Amino acid sequence: MSTQAQGPIDFRTYYDLEPYLFDTVSKRFTTDHTLSAFDFFCIVIWKANRAKSKIARRLMEHGTYPDLDAAVRALVGDVAAASTPKDKLRVLFNDWGLLIPTASAILTVLYPSEFTVYDIRVCDELGDFHWVANISRYDRLWDAYEKYVATVKRAAPDGLPLRDKDRWLWGKSFAEELRQDVATVFTRTKKEPNRA
Image (cartoon, rainbow, N blue to C red; front, side, top):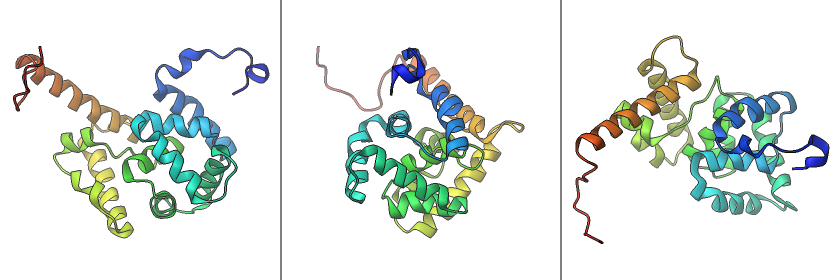
């Protein structure tokens, strides 16, 4: 990230990663067919911040790369070279060992009209698909993910692009959960010990 080549950086860009990912990273990938490690890990952090160091280790262990930029270039090159959506997910899941939540987030940023993020909150809203995260055989995973995407498309209002259908379902789940929490004064189902 060089401030000299690009001018001063407006760090507000990174305050909310989603607009940066879909307005900048996704468009840059469409043109360049590559990502920097910085942009790749913006995707990882957006989906699962807690997983970033584990994923970095996995990438570095995948081959003999001098740094994360080289590993990310190799991973993204493999994805871009895959000819079908099924093959693109296979590259991340089978070849690079990324789990479906992270793999689907990466592919959603790179190919937002073909993929949607596999997300537990959306699974809650759909009332199904929690089991998809436990599938280890790729062909079964792909079949389940395709059903998940089809259900996301049907469950959200017509006329929205796939990315907005995912956002709509996530937002609905968030709003309903918060309404319930407010109505019950944020009481939990399980009693927590009083720590005061």
